[in-house]
Amino acid sequence: MPSSDNSGPVIKAYLNNENFVDGQTVPADPVLFLQLSDASGINIAGTGSGKGITVVIDGDASNTYLLNNLYEADSNTYQRGRLQWPVTGLEAGEHRLLITVWDANNNKTELTLHFRMLNKEKLAITKLFNYPNPFVNSTRFHVEYNRGDLRPELNIRIISLFGQELKTIRATINSNGSRSSDIDWDGRGNNGAMLPPGIYIYQLQLRSATDDQTSVKCGKLLRL
Image (tube, rainbow, N blue to C red):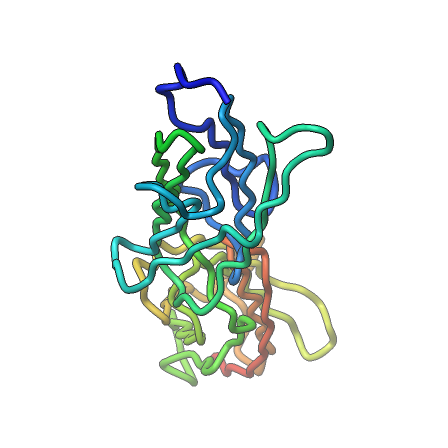
């Protein structure tokens, strides 16, 4: 092995697929992929001052993982190889992985990946109502949902008892971690005119802009 090797290994790291960009949002329990190369080879024996391949989660030394046994050299070479490791047990939110790789000459390279992990929970509307109800001139829709890690897109359809769609309301909410949203409606249809007094059905579709999950719930309202 070349004794003149004073450079650490080259690390290519990504989560789930090669299109990953540092800081990106990923689904729960992503998989870390490492592609490693070095003229002296990767130290997976843990000898000398080198410690092989390690990952530290969120800067917490107690969450240090040694991945030497997952490393597989490419065919017919000791200078390149790869591994994959499921990143499990984390809560939704911002995280970082400090990846350290040593070569056989005890040179090291460090690389940090940042990512935002989504919630495992399936998106669900937990409460939906409008107030006041009955109303005369305007009302407000209040929706609550089970996740705070989304940028909610709301689509509310006002439908007559005969199934005619009279009004569509669309909104994107900057939730900032909130699990509820409020949308005001002036009682007017798509044509700009006030809807006649009567009973109407409303259907609210909630969509997460972060992972494209949707949830739908319906209710009734009365205009006096």
